[in-house]
Image (cartoon, rainbow, N blue to C red):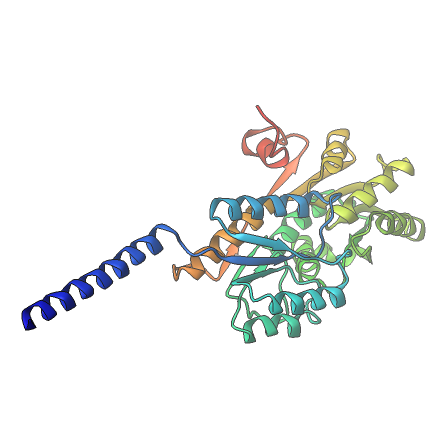
Length: 325
């Protein structure tokens, strides 16, 4: 009788252990479904930069079977709404929040709450006054500014002046590009006559360009520091028939900007890689969750494009990423 009891207990224990083993095997076969929230500065179909960044993030999320949600203000400069969205995102308890900070200082406290809540924070595109992110994936904006500054230095006449159409004044991205521009200009940085902030609005950039060229007729080069500022400036220069008098250089590469490059309105553009930012942001967040090594800072890269090299090698693929051969 005793032997039967021992045998029965052994069978039950073997059964329980078998269930545990097969449950473990199934858990290995089906990795955890992670949930991430991406909070860019804006979701704007007219902005090639943000549209392509979103596509990159969505592709990575699909490949890694991640549930990905987007939340964003209607305007890039609206840090108040972005802060509210950050609070809402924290309540939803995602595994990771990816954030492009709207303001260098005023986004910081809300972003810190992400970390205080024990949620992983990945900064994409634009950071803040203190580096509290687990990972940052962005263009090296100082380097982008240096490259466009070096081009501007070669274009500005001895007696000429420079006008800058920037975007959101307290954005870390804008601040870094302006700093890089001055470094690239070196001793010609004193030729910057004025910096106008368009709040990433095409019409404001247009109006600001007209205002600068009217107020400062010695301006011979305009620098547009993102898609909105550069496109608005190009439209204004074209409408004012100043293509032969005022040189224009920029950062970013929307289809409209590329058309202006072909027409000779732009002399050069520094092209970012927004698809890389979105894709790498998700991919590296996944590695972070799986306790794999990830560098704390990742430069997503950029390239200097002119009319002469726009169809050469990888440059063509960079400015026409979705064109089939």
